[in-house]
Length: 324
Image: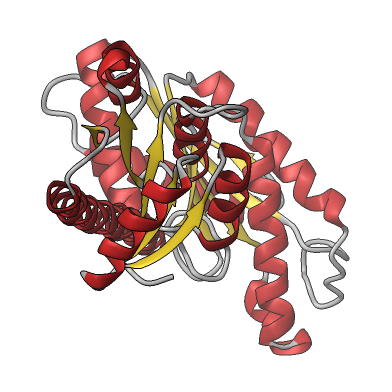
């Protein structure tokens, strides 16, 4: 049915014919029904924009028709027709969602005016509904885009601080984190430890097994390093080509040495073949440990330099060991 579709329900057939004919002359498409039962059946078939219904009918009343119409299609314009003695029923019809009511016998021009106003209101309400739906859809799309952008931003931020090969933190983040933790240690008067780790004879490994095998070895060792730490504040960073740094906030030298020994044993347990090593038949690591209780004026490089000297000591003493 078109936007000017009307269903007219009245059990007074003579009045039904007169009024429906008058509405058709005004350009409306009118379907008629002489009972509430047949009216509801026709309504479900054609879904008109306007329903004009007598309130007082035998069988299914106009009130029941109104309830069913509003339940099935809430924006339908319903105009109730009522006699002089049924004003309470008219008020009930308005309460249930009727657009307006007319006293019978109603004036055809007045009915046409009410239908026209009802259709205009219906059109505006539908436009508002469509705009609201468009706004909700646009808002939903905006939220999705913001979430996608946030995810991308987080991903980029993560990539900016991670080493692309080993997925450990990179040197840039290590420097930032060290500065942060030194300040925290000074403020809280806590100890701060650092472990520097170097893969023994790694150049020989790359030269004989190839750089792809070398990359795979770095990944395996990085995984072992990460699994050796159990606190969120402890971090692993790739310090150089085959060097890693472990930062251990609120950790004593004794505690850092235990962690370093565990890392050394975990790397050996990987049993990565290294037939060209001067240390062992598998890949091993040397580790240098330092720990300080920083005070005002403490320099971050002091912690790293001490760990580097300890690492140099471990290498000079035969590698595959922990020094401090």
